[in-house]
Length: 218
Image (tube, rainbow, N blue to C red; front, side):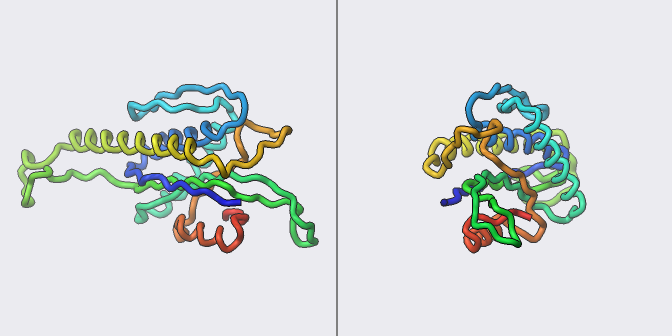
């Protein structure tokens, strides 16, 4: 089975924006991979002029919140590292030849989403048409203006990510696995993984190719 990969455009965020950004992206992907009847719930972002849809399942919301908390905790331990990734993987479980040293089932991954974040700290920058450094406050953007520009740019980037998700799920359907009649849960089975500081999406893809897309993420 081929594993389709979607790498989303990098989002430049401040640390306090991470939770809201990841909620929006993760819930949108899972909603579009929902199975059967769900009770969609429109969510207005707390920080942005954006609305996204959740499946309305407490277990999914709980898992996403826990993973976001874990992500924020991990990046706080690497303050000098700016680029970070979260991977959302969909898989199916298949039986394999039994062996005394391994389990009887394995996860076969058929779709992966890479969410790319660049963590930034706000700085007071020069105006776009400024050609030399000066200390005149009138020649620099105020903190409020800069925050507004950052928020506007981030909202536009999130919207672009959401459109990229919708385009992908509408165009990439041939790889979707058969839905068993006794399927449980509201979506295909999935897992959310925080890539280690030493592993990139390219590293993960290489491991997938070497192992037939059946490697469980660490």
